[in-house]
Structure formats: structure tokens, C-alpha cells
Length: 250
Image 1 (cartoon, rainbow, N blue to C red):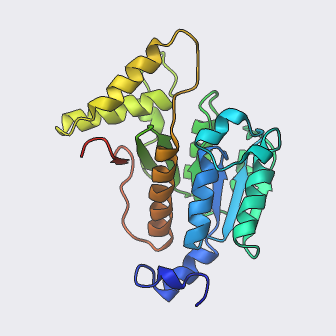
Image 2: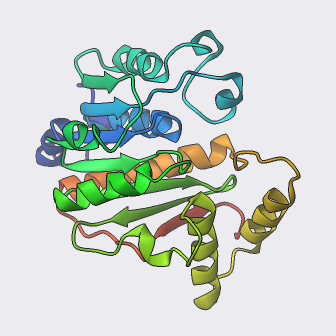
């Protein structure tokens, strides 16, 4: 029994070999840390991760770190964990923040990207622009607490800027609001998402959005499935469509 023998039936030997060397880049190792492990266990062994943050106590409710990692560099901590799972994997990390000056050099050589960057600047959208120019599809994962949301920006498709309102910069909340409106239009409303967003926007302090481990693992599974479909040339939805998985509307 080899490492991936339990993947049989779901993956052919040819597909397993294809994803092994398929180069994936993750911008951000917050939710990206969970996605990276799920992808690695599936068989993606060529992974690059970029982040300049350090692990904080508040990360441990949903990100792939442990107490011993607190105050250490995220990329080094996740690299150590991934290599403890598969020491033969090609795990490359860059302990820095992405800038307009360095994005292109890091993206070069990869076939799919995961944009798990914080929307505290315009770098996430610039990241997408560079990937689109280089014919690289980009996965955008979102933690909705009790559910996960993922959309894919394709080289010839629309960008997230297409839903940007005048005089308002795009951020994670705008994407969630768009997805909620889309679901309502198609008569499949997820009212709990609106309730959570309303409560968040009513908070007196400026705080990061609330997130749960439940959604981190949902999103990791969704992204890994999409990575597989892209690597094996299977059909995927592209933005403005999206994928949503939740345990709340059953």
C-alpha cells in the first residue's frame, strides 16, 4: 500500500501523477495553511506559500497552527507541518509580504494560484491581474463561519472589480454581500449569512470578520477539489458564479 492507495477509484494513477508535480502557489497562509494541508494529503506535492505574518493566539481557532507556533513566522511553521506529513514534498515558502514590485516574480512558474490575502490593500486585486495576464486561474476562498465560499477568477473571465461599487473599495464583505444577493435572486436565500454580516457591521470596534474552523475545512476541501479539476482539465464554474457549501440550510 503506497501513500495514495486510498485515493483509488476517486483518482486514476494518471491523475495522481499529474497533480503530484502540478505547481500551486498560495498567497497568504491564514486559511491558506488549511488548504495547503488538504491539497498535500490529496497528492499535490509542489506547493509555494507566501506570507510575512507571524502566528497569533487568535489564529488557532481556525488556522493550521499550534500553540508552539505562536510568535513564529507562519510560513516556516506551515512548512514544518507539511514536511512532517510528506518529507519528499516540494514545499517552498517566502517569508515576506506581496507587493506590486515582487508579485510577478513569485507567481512565475505556477499553474494555479490561491488568493488568500487580506483585503487591507489593493494587492489582492493586483495579484489577480498578474495571474490573469499569465493565464493562471485564481481561487478565492472565503470563511463564512458555518459555511465556505469559493470563486475562481479565470484568465479570460471577469475580475472581482466588476462588482465594485463607485467610491467603494472591494473587500471580503463585498464578495459575501454579492453572493448573498445572488442566492436570493435564484430563490435559494441563506438568511443566516445576512444576520452574521449585520451583526459584524454593527460592532463598535473595527475588527476582522468572525470566522470558524468549520468553514476553514470546508473551504480547504472545496479548493482542493477545484485544484484537482483544474489540473486534470475538468470543468469548473468561473466568477461571477461561485461555489458555496454550508451546514445551515439543511
